[in-house]
Amino acid sequence: MDNSYKIKVQNVTKEYDLYKSQAEKLRAFFSLRNSKVPHFWSLMGISLEVKPGETLGLIGVNGSGKSTLSNIISGIIPQTTGVVDVKGDTSIIAIGAGLRGNLTGLENIRLKALMQGLTNTEIDGLMDDIVSFADIGDFLYQPVKSYSSGMKSRLGFSIAVHVNPDILIIDEALSVGDDTFYQKCVDKISEFKDEGKTIVFVSHSLKQVEILCDRVAWIHYGTLKEIGLTNDVVKHYREFTKWFKTQTKKEKKHFQRQMKTNQKSFDIDAYQEQVTAERQAAAPNDDNVAAAVKKDFYGSVISEKMSWSNRILTLAVGVVFVLACLVNVSGRSVSDVMQHPSNLIHPETVLHDNNATTNVK
Ligand SMILES: Nc1ncnc2c1ncn2[C@@H]1O[C@H](COP(=O)(O)OP(=O)(O)OP(=O)(O)O)[C@@H](O)[C@H]1O
Image (spheres, helix red, strand yellow):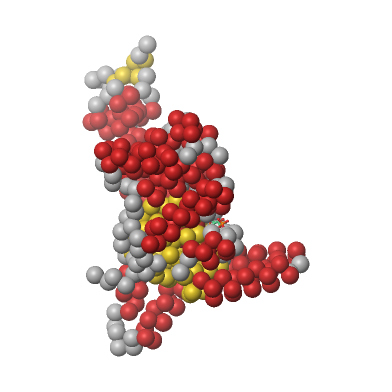
């Protein structure tokens, strides 16, 4: 087993279809025509590794893809292409991540801990520590939907650090708490670091990143702009934000629009060809490069789109189901309906042996 990394992300992309409504999404799902829904590539080919015991920071402007990447690593959402190899149990702390709004704080603690593989006895043993770290008082007995973002973060953080995961993914969870809670969290994260656990830390606070992270990945509008030692990457990112601030309002808008246009027009096939060409150049005598790249891109992903054969099959099953319901409602036998299909449309009439029909009252 390759122990050089704890998390490996290779050629990862994430595509979103920008449907205007759920109805439009459902129509497109069953449509036999290629629908003209605009696409948006939240990630356009990210490759990176997180070493065992390392704390990797993810930084970048709003909407650059940090949460998308951390959610893919946590297994909350699937990637569109690429390999994601995570060695160990992950626990994600984002504001309210995985908390069920209709359940109380206490119920959420039990649910999340059970989902993490703990037994009820283990949870009972941890309950006091989780409750005391979260420190949200009687709100524990209230549904989580009534919590402030700070309270959700407290509860989420407390559960995540107490279920003892191998890998901790912290997404902006420290930005909403007060100073005392913030310090408690930083101490807990430092404890985790000392225990040699692996951490992915998503934050807009460069100060927090500088305190906690060994290395940093700068995600820039869906691409990995830079990865390296914290001081170097943070310095370059600060230079970028400083430059951005010197731009006029119009120039800023133009820059952002340009970046978003790139993300809408990203060509996944061209990217696959580019990766194939790069790997072929590195291994000119290898005849299997194209097949290996195809496997890396699509081998471990579940398509979110229905193939043509599946669409036709689903449609056929749907038609058979509707027919079966009609036959049932008509009160006739299948063979009767097959001989006289029009009986399905006129269920109020009953067929006699001599083929004469009468109305049923
Ligand atoms: N479900 C979705 N459907 C369509 N677009 C989405 C969806 N989720 C995220 N996006 C888009 O993907 C891009 C990346 O979003 P993401 O939340 O990962 O960015 P981020 O870097 O975490 O931003 P922030 O710092 O503001 O939290 C954004 O442009 C966002 O609008």
